[in-house]
Each structure stands twice: as structure tokens, then as C-alpha cells.
Image 1 (tube, each protein chain N blue to C red):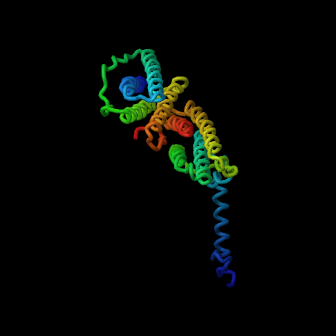
Image 2 (cartoon, one colour):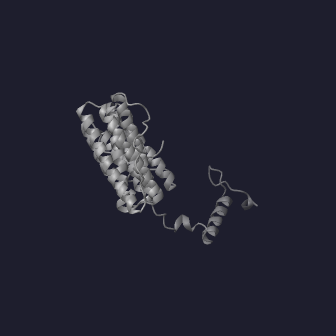
Image 3 (tube, helix red, strand yellow):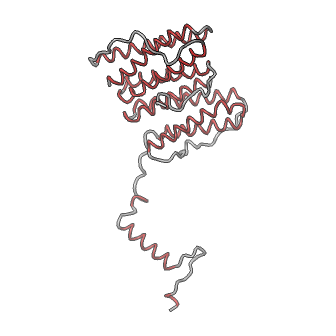
Length: 141
Length: 164
């Protein structure tokens, strides 16, 4: 199970970093609020993963000091594009956790994957990207 | 002499001899127990994911009906119907059966919608219910199926969001 948890942890840490960059390029209050709320949720998911991995007596290793973003975030449009990509990636990172967990842990993993998919849907709407949804969130495309 | 000749039984070209012979063969096979599973055996237990597949087809049909009644909504809701059809196809593949709606999934629709806001609210409520059933199914399904069922639950949650 630790490999799947480590994968999700990596994605959550990358999301926290990315929202720091995304927030700078957003000016509309609703979008800034959405980005802040998303960052907070990713921090909570990260903390849960760290504690789960510690329960398994495994080390999480230090988070990297920085991440290489997939493209330069130069304006609002790029910030929204990155937010969509980040949330899709987070959803993908949680899906393997579902098959590696049971009971309450699986419920938490599903909530994390679902929340990321719903946020991706919101960012698509703000960016006027259609379709808003995909048939299998979390599944690699 | 006459009795040894083939006697035409019907317009389909079957002869009395052939029909009698076929009947005898079936009796013999039945007596050997080879056909028992066609008449006496219990039907196979439905797969635990069958209700999820039925629900997907019912939701797709509900979107189709809304798109016909309210063409202005079609562009917005047709992608959601396609998501549900993709779920039904994938569930059928996993279950190992063809994606045919059961009686409950094919239930008679209500009157055509005329109010877009009411139609969207109805679809949203249906998606919320469907999302909850997928969440429950994900919690109880096998490790191998958990990813797929989880993705379906997450997709239904995004539909609730998309219908806001």
C-alpha cells in the first residue's frame, strides 16, 4: 500500500506548490478564494497521507524544495490550465489507492479523488473549457 | 408406401418425420440432464455491479429525453449522457454481460420536460442519488474493481457540479 500512498503524496505536494504559483496570477476574488480553498484541502490530504505512511513505519522522505512546472504560468489563462492539470493529476494519483485500501481508508481515498475531480470541473468552467467532465476521472488517459 | 414418404408439415418446409425426430432427440437429451440448465436451474446471481450499470443506462436515457424535450440544453447535457454510456459499457465488460438495461432501468419515463430549470434540478437530484450508490458500491467492491467504481462515483459527482 505504501507505494500507492507515496504516489498520492507526491501529487499532493506538487499541487500545494502549484497553487502557490497559480494564486499569484489570479485576480478575480472568486478564483482566488477557490485556489486558496483548494490549497488548504491539498495540505489536509498531504497530512493524512504522511500519517498513514508513518503508521506503516515507512519514511515519506523530504519533499523537494521546488517543482518543475509543465509550462510557464504567465497569466490567468495559464494559471487555470495548470489548475486543471494539477487536479486531474491528483485524481489519477488517488485511484490506485482505492484498490490498495479498504473500509475507512478507501472512503477517504475516494473522497480525495472525487474532490480533485470536482475541482477540475470547476476550473474547466472558469476557463471555459468543454466538456466540463470526463467519463473516468482518475484514469490515466 | 404412402406412409414412408415425407409429408409436408408446414410452409416452413418441416416434415412430420423431421419434427418427430427433433422431438425425440430433445426428450433423450433432456433425460440425460444435458438441458437441465435451460429449464430447471436457478438463474445466475446478478453481479453486484449490475445495479450500477442499470443506473448508468437509466441516467443516459433521462438525459436523452431531456435533450429531446429541451433542445437548448442538448449541448450542455449530451456529454454527460455519453459519460454514463461509457460507464455502462465498461461495467458490462467487467461484469461479462452485454449492456442491456434491466426492467427497472428501462422504466417508463415521466411526461416530457418543459421547464429547463426544473429539468436540470431533476437530473441533478438523480445524479446525487446515483453518486451515493456508486460510493457505497466502491466501499464494498473488490480491490480489482475499486478503481473503476471509484471513477464512476467521482464522475457522477462532477455531473452534480456541472449541472449547477
